[in-house]
Length: 300
Ligand SMILES: *[C@@H]1O[C@H](CO)[C@@H](O)[C@H](O)[C@H]1NC(C)=O
Ligand SMILES: *[C@@H]1O[C@H](CO)[C@@H](O)[C@H](O)[C@H]1NC(C)=O
Image (cartoon, rainbow, N blue to C red):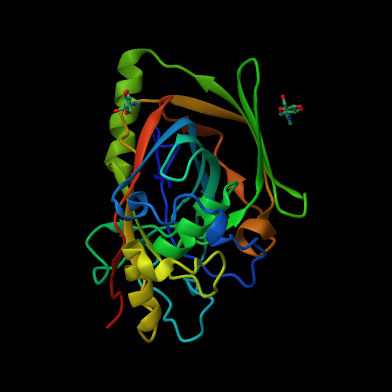
């Protein structure tokens, strides 16, 4: 999950919230999940390696706070920064506790809410993966509203062309990039600027998912689910806080040659989303971690 990277003044960060109505997802069956009963589920942080990982800034983000949850009675998270830049991240994991998979996520802006913690906060509002195991773990352990999609990654002469389709086969994201390795001193400078904005970790707030999608019948035996269950039980439900860390040690600029983001898919409204012309590609075989979920109370 990704982080926000920023290069120079062009790129930024973001964070925000989720909501949205019904999502169509394929329930996972506990019987077919080879990992659900293993200790791997309970060991935090989860560690990942990605061979491709891109971060782009997206604008405009939300103009006003949105209710972060589709549950009625959940307060709007205070502290939203209007116009704060959104972030789009695209990753292809080669190693993780639930195997290889691809991921795309959208963070629509930033929150600063001292009740939730001192750091600027993100919220992963829309996220797609091509692994039902990842979908289930994300939804049930961290409250990350993962949906399923199909990813097509094509290496081109100059970079990467990625197409993402929803379950109905509709293309809702297309991104063609050219990568620009920079001379070392510039890479070092760009990385340190990015780190100043992003740090090494993105702190995100998620709401436990208000459906049973992919819920394992074994969930009660897996302690990793306990935080989510505690959040479900509270009235109104509590958000889950976690750190998504990317160890920003380098990377290259990624020039965006072509970008298409279907705005309705990402935000539910038709206002055009613009991808910044320059993004950031993190180092090959980058390591990432997903921290232990904790329940927080972001309102009095
Ligand atoms: C993006 O890349 C794909 C694969 O190389 C290519 O077929 C397509 O024409 C490119 N699209 C644009 C708009 O450059
Ligand atoms: C990720 O971790 C592996 C194993 O510890 C290490 O070999 C590799 O160099 C790391 N990758 C990066 C980009 O730091």
